[in-house]
Image 1 (tube, rainbow, N blue to C red):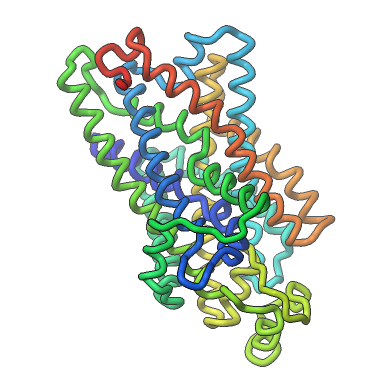
Image 2 (image 1 turned 90 degrees about the vertical axis):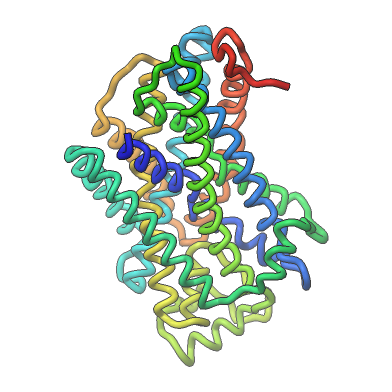
Length: 412
């Protein structure tokens, strides 16, 4: 039970930290960083995390009380056509998430190699993720548990290091969290805000959480034991999401503090005099406001804070990307088994998902530039938000039905 609990905790931390998703909203964070206020993006992170915690509680409760995960309950409660549509929407979210993992890893490999590994080469290297996952999965839960813990530690240390180096204003950070404000925000900023919600609360996570709790043996006829299990799962989820919240804040705070009111010409000036790690074509020779993304951000960190900051940034991105393969595979396997009663091996699942994700990403990496590749993330974040109702409606509906939840149904 202890081992399954640690695995659940590690997987939960990973699911609520997707740096490619969070960082794609950084151009908005820089745009809306007012003089004494730390961006609406920072305000969205705690609230999205809290909502994610509540939804995770419902998902865990459904799994504990019924002994079935959300996809299995959907299979029993919905007719064939709605069930198939629901399955397709969730699969779309899983594939979109895997595409983001591919993009993030490709960019990380490019940064770590100082451009020697092209983006399309990084995309192809992510195929190795499949074999790493399958190797660890073959040797049992403890190996996966250790690997997850290792990756989460790398993420925390990497982005925590960046936070310490940049030293954001703590007072302004707290203001931004609790006093949301965005002067002159328009449709573009609203799109970013919607994308942030989808980045933090990903629809397939809800399906996965309801399945992970089944790893523990619980006497569901014993109301006291069920209630106790729900309590401890909630405590575990709270700890996990607090860790992921801190990491997300590290990422956003670093970029908003480091690059606010910086111009392209400042970056180019530092580049030509102090470092050779920046590709000059990324930054035009003008005084326009600096716009950064997951790729440019790493490069500029290297300019202002030294090459170590760039490499540590890339390592953190790579660690997050590697762990995404496993969470996506588990989600896809549970969803397919639950909706379709179709049992595939994890080998087949990861090959299917990764094959679909790599093809469009590889085309963009070969025939377009890094701006188009990171631009795909913007669309994929919004896609995750658009898929949220296909998880929210079922989980809210089923956990409110006494015929399914008995005494543990949602109350008003």
